[in-house]
Amino acid sequence: MAENDSLSDFLASAVDAAKRAGEIIRKGFYETKHVEHKGTVDLVTETDKACEDLIFNHLKQLYPTHKFIGEETTAAFGVVELTDEPTWIVDPLDGTTNFVHGFPFVCVSIGLTIGKVPTVGVVYNPIMNELFTGIRGKGAFLNGNPIKVSSQTELVKSLLATEAGTKRDKPTLDSYMNRINILLAKVRSLRMTGSCALNLCGIACGRLDLFYELGFGGPWDVAGGAVIVTEAGGLVYDPSGKDFDITAQRVAASNPLLKDAFVEALQQPE
Image (cartoon, rainbow, N blue to C red; front, side, top):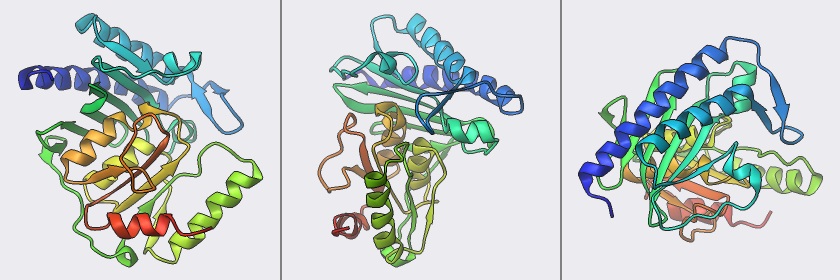
């Protein structure tokens, strides 16, 4: 494990990279977008690519021996392999659909895993000027101020976030809507912000009580946010209740008080 001083350096480097990419996002947010389709509803823009190039170039100059995984480059070439080596996992623009529509829930997400464990996390929303940070064992922060998860104990008083994903085939949609129907009967209300990373940060700062998503893009969606949730006193786990696997494209998060009831609700037959 790296020394704490090194982790602080890693965090500072990630914040610097995120803020530089954030300038590109902020500028592009108010301009005409040039959009490509990775799938029927999965979008990518020139801004996604420019931000990833900037972040990777910045971090590779500082840490040439580290590994790198990114949504728009590494992942485009097939299977993502996560090793024990220090690995920067980057989503240069989480919430691309929001970005295209001018909906301000967009962010840069940068996570560093060491020994496959999420260790440093930065999530930056340049439109709303919110910077979430976390270092394993050192707490979580929003714009430099400590944050913690909610103390809610009842599902019926909880705010739930989830996402529909990018698949639009009937079996996937039927399964998704059936689960939503079950959950809506048990919680106060539901939100879809369009950003997995910001949903995790919403758990971390207590804006949201419950979050789950199945079939998201990859580890770049959760690498940064997972550290921040954990350091804010929350739990990140598989929706089945088992241990969180950063490569599994399945995630749930909540405060510790809600986990058991949430997992039970998620496991009810559709």
